[in-house]
Length: 213
Image (cartoon, rainbow, N blue to C red; front, side, top):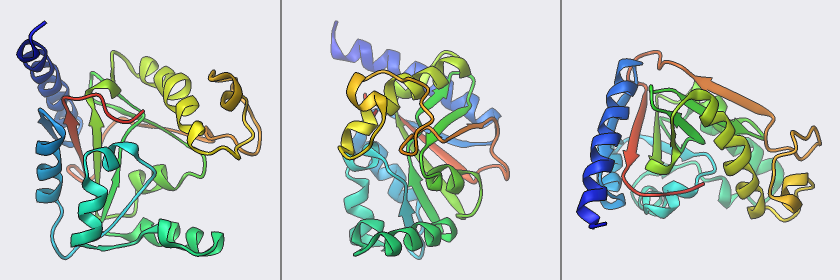
């Protein structure tokens, strides 16, 4: 199949979902590729903003993390020398100006599903930062909310735990969600964001590539 055929389909699909997100109060944009998404994200972040982020492979893959570290004042938990300092930085990030993240699943009708272990990412999405930028590849879009939750539990979480070899969770060994209740569970908070209030605080950039988990 010619690449431009897939690009046209992704553009139609992405713009339809972006329109549904706007109906639910989100600012939303569709970008064909990661380069355009990077430019759009930087355009949406005022130069005087303090920026922080939650765990996201997507923002690394498109080069956004590198750019914000070079351009903006940041709260960078990766620079913490101790777990106590890291925890304090994560708390400070809840009051930053712009918070960056992806989403574990986005339904076609324009709702977000996210799962967290610690909860800092979901907390920032819900309240605190002046604005939240959600960057998500087209692979994160699902037919329904139920499908988005299934994706988050059975695809995103089991892949994500492989980044942390010390986690003692069943999916680390099996690759399958076991609905575990252990102390190391990465599925402690499950958040459905049906609408954005106040309108426009959460800005979603959909990208016509497969990115992240």
